[in-house]
Amino acid sequence: MTAQKNFQVNLRGMIELLSGHLYSGPQVYIRELLQNCVDAITARQQVDAEHVGEIRFELVTGGEGSRPTLVVSDNGIGLTEDDLHEFLATIGQSSKRGPEVQRDTFIGQFGIGLLSAFMVCEELVVITRSAKPDSKTVEWTGRSDGTYQVRVLEHDFEPGTQVFVRSRPGTEEFFEPDFIISRAKFYGSYLPHDIQVRFGDERRLINETAPWDMQFENRDIERDTLLRMGKETYEIDFIDAFRINTEVGGVQGVAFVLPHSASVASKRAHQVYLKNMLLSDRLDDLLPDWAFFVHCILNVTDLKPTASRESFHDDEDLDAARDAIGASLRGYLVDLSKTDKERLAAIINLHHLPMKSLAVDDDDFYKMFIDWLPFESSSDTITLGELCEQQEVIQYVPSRDQFRQIAGVAASQDMCIINAGYTWDVELLTKMPYLFPKRQIEQLDVTQLSQNFQDLTLDERDEVMDFLRTAAAALQSFRCEADIRRYEPSDLPTLYTASDEASFLRSVDQAKESANDLWGGVLDGFNIDHSRRAWANLCFNFSNPLIRKLASLSNREIIQRAVEMLYVQSLLLGHYPLKSGEMKLLGNGMLKMIEYCVSLSPENDE
Image 1 (cartoon, rainbow, N blue to C red):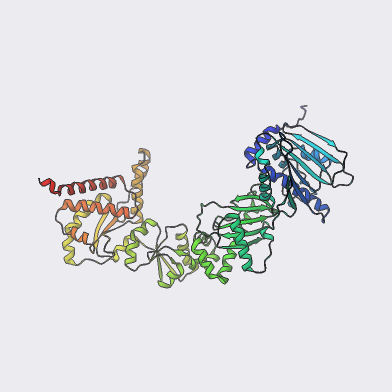
Image 2: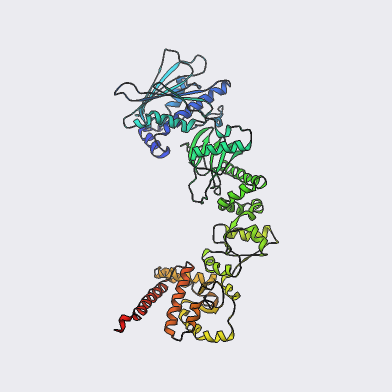
């Protein structure tokens, strides 16, 4: 029968794995040692509720040539000799496990935290005495080569633990006094136990009152104090700050409203604490995606951290906490709508994008806030509520390119058309009739816009007939019709409009120009609609002096060149990418224009 054997672990390889892949860097050894202190105190308070925890970081520099040593002490539960063998010498074994242990009260639970110290030292010494009766003081010495030894000390030692971390060459920066103070404060300033940092004659207590524990006389004092805190933390002058409290996930903290608009892709900088100890200062998955208008400082008690202790497990509990935080943010906006409409209007003006995102998915929020949300229109930016008061039917175009085509013309015709080419706008507008049945929403067919323009008289139509024939012939190869009417503004010579079908075929043509033979054959299958519906339209403006003069010419070559250039200009005004034939048209037109101007030079008559 084959004998059973145990796996062997290469400690040096494990340390490299921790430093290179699990932890963000050697600096986290401060956090891991601090975490062990906190958990030791928590364990002692479970058997002695009146116990007052204390943690001390002491930097010992020694004489010239000696290496600095950091001594981290706590008056927690301590360890027995058996505990040292079981927990410190076994990777992955944690004292915070077992059926009798209340795991949710501890920060660390993976049994690997102490290993982080080996990222900055070769040898680790732990002197400890358990709070259990008749316990001895024990010393454990571990080395980065995987060996360790344990011995019982004769002298008395108060229950608790001291960890001695002596720097190895190349890690001196992690033992500088300023580094120790800043890291200890960074991770532990909101912990409920006194934390003191000592070096030389200096004694510094790093504790501060956590924002979620602060008490205020009234809302104005609370807002002013929190805004000052936000300024100190993020160096940003936020426009508002408010509390977040959710039972789900045990979340408490503060949200700061940004003073500038932010995009969905913008970097989020949320400071998140786990049981009052910093988890991460750049966590991005605890808040809903639409909540990019706030920066938060949050403390969480009921979510599970990953082994790196720099994020949370992505599970149902995290999803539920995220939803609860979203509900809290939504509640803040609802409360403002009742108590401070001026502040709400200022916030919506800056952060309408996340508001629109929320309104798309939340019908109740939609009903309450849709009339506050701004939309770009041909009559400048306007809220939907204002627009509904002005006209019975709300018209929109679904793309910015279409809006650019018709915005100036629509404004001159006193038509207010919404540009729904921005994120979530189409969804919001098409959702309106379902929640407000009396309101009418209509997508504008841009090809029908020219039908509202003023027709020419019969005499004028006769005058421009030859011009229209020449223009139609010049545009035929581009699947574009020619028309001529009167419309405003008069300084716009032409208006190019394209139906959805025409725009689609145009995109197919452009794709074919860069496709190989196989892909080009596939695209040919899309290019089957040759009806007039699939043609664009170039409407010449008879109110424009240039067009009137052009229509009076008899030279067809000049008319053709002018029409081609006006066609390309209209495409550029509509931000349409030019196809290769249109680029060639532009180039040839420019050369012909230069050639014509040169021919008019008096020097050519000599």
